[in-house]
Image (tube, rainbow, N blue to C red; front, side):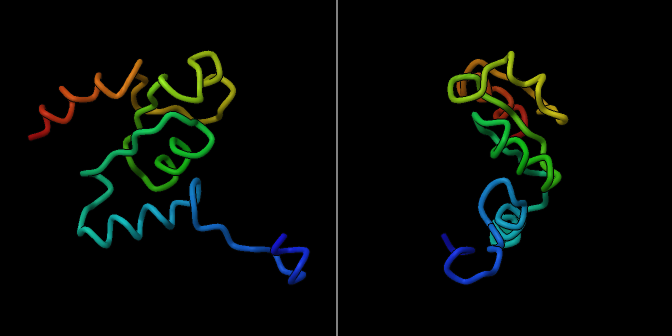
Length: 94
């Protein structure tokens, strides 16, 4: 709609554009090496994390299935059945 109304292509800042993630990391003073992206969609969450240089974790409790992962040219660092599996990873980093 924006393009039709203005004749110009919009610049999207939301996922999967990594600008949003980098801005958030800058705001909290964090570095990509100390952060991770957790999400349930390969085409937004995981792609954004990969492009922002984050370690990525796909949870299979949402949109993307394990079989669909193979269709993407990138892979998450970890694949988990649900968010609960990440608790011990977070605790290990403390």
